Amino acid sequence: MFSISFRTALFAALVSLISLSGCAVFEPVGGFFAQGYRNTVTYFNAYYNAQRLFRSAEEEIRAADRQRLRGVPSSAPAPQGPARTIPAPARQKLTAVIDKCSNILAFHGSSDYVDDALYLVARSYFLLGEYVKSERKCAELLAQYPASELTVPARVWLGRALLEQSRVKESEEVLMEGLAIASVREDEETQAMALESLSALHRKKGDVGSALRYASQLRSLAPDNESVAAAMLEEARLLLEEERAEQALEPLSSVAQVTDDPFVQFEAGMLKVDALRQLDRLEDALGSLQAMEQDFRFRDRLGEVQLERARLLEETGRLEEAIAAYTTADTSFVRTPTGASAAFELGSLYEARRGDYALALKQYERSAALGTFPITIQARRRASLFSRYFQLQSRLLLAD
Image 1 (spheres, rainbow, N blue to C red):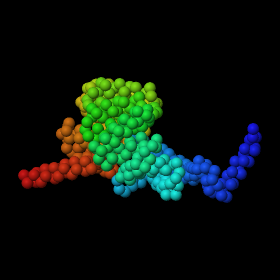
Image 2 (tube, rainbow, N blue to C red; image 1 turned 60 degrees about the horizontal axis):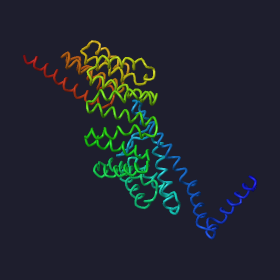
Image 3 (cartoon, rainbow, N blue to C red; image 1 turned 90 degrees about the horizontal axis):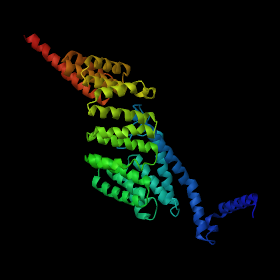
Image 4 (cartoon, rainbow, N blue to C red; image 1 turned 90 degrees about the vertical axis):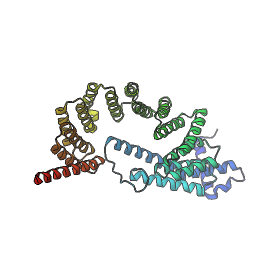
């Protein structure tokens, strides 16, 4: 038996021989060794780095998406064109992935990593919002490497790229085919991705019942607790859209058993409030909001909780308390979407509930001045209407 030191020396000599003579050394011995050498060079020179960059970019994009959902502005500048807003470092990494994988396709075409490279390029284009290019790379992989294990997930990514282009019928056919093949192969991760995409597709078509059917299957197939929790939240949202609030409470109450992530817990809590409102259990909904308001885990979303509480107080007819709650949300979260919405909705309360157009105008003007959010556009329109109303009223008084 060779000693460890001898084997190490032998391996070093072999590497030296490869570096001096190239892969031609192995050709007389057999294509197996030559292919192994090509695969090693391709993997460490390009594919390994591309894969590492892609994973890092994915993590950065997820983090940015979660920040936006939490209401925290992303530091990434919004890109021009149809691409989604993703952090600039992630965009640079995905571009580098495409470059590195393109080098594999151009200069290492006989490597066993060509299908992997095509798959990474397709997914990178998808994340960059370049859906036509993603579609082409998926189709190329399916056509040129039909025996590759990656054809199953690539088919689902193809369906997703088609859906993003609003080619709904084609997308559904491809996704259904991908789901069927993944089910036969017991590829649960790909099944979950196909189910999620089919649920989104039917929601886009307005077929909430079918969307719910696919979403409800995700719980048992989701690859990790975070995905299971996301599936529960989506199922609850769809049930609420179908006005099945009692059933929506079941997945929402189960979320805490799956994850203690504050972000997920907050989303579940707000959906629970929506369900209780739909069931006309407004006092219970107020109680849930009060508990969330006191939960330190949700302190970065306190404004949203206070704004929702103000809305519920208004719905229950407790107008003085609602006015105080709207005012607190407005003044505590100045120049944020929450503050602008609170000022606007307080204006609506004065307009519709009190008939006090002067105070309504004041609140609309305040909301309009609090930033450049979608709600401030509506506020400017309302403020303009009421300003003209008061100008007209003044002219009529002068005419009398």
